[in-house]
Length: 119
Image (cartoon, rainbow, N blue to C red; front, top):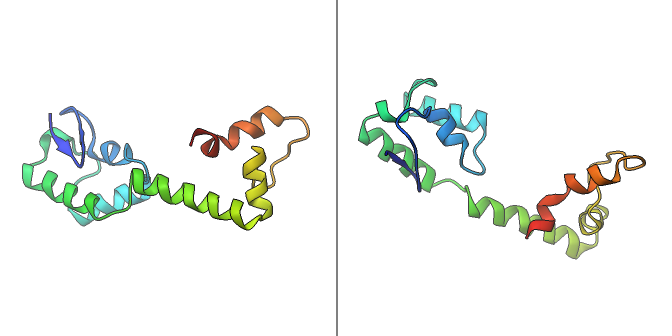
């Protein structure tokens, strides 16, 4: 099974989907990475030469993904809480931060803010 960064993928997995499986890499970033390394968007992990896999791994090690990205998000929320801003207080109460309606959907509103409650 081929490895990219720290994860192993099946031979039939699309490289684009494999890159998007890492926290902090979305569709646009994965497309940019594929274009930078001249890899077709529909290429499969098993079809890539080992040098391309090493190049992808090297690129991902230089990026802020996975735990670094999660830590950055947690630190940003903690900074808002420490300053006592409106957004920080909304995070503490588990309410929506970006102005969503809470009149009839308070449970949905609490689910929107689950990022903070996990850590």
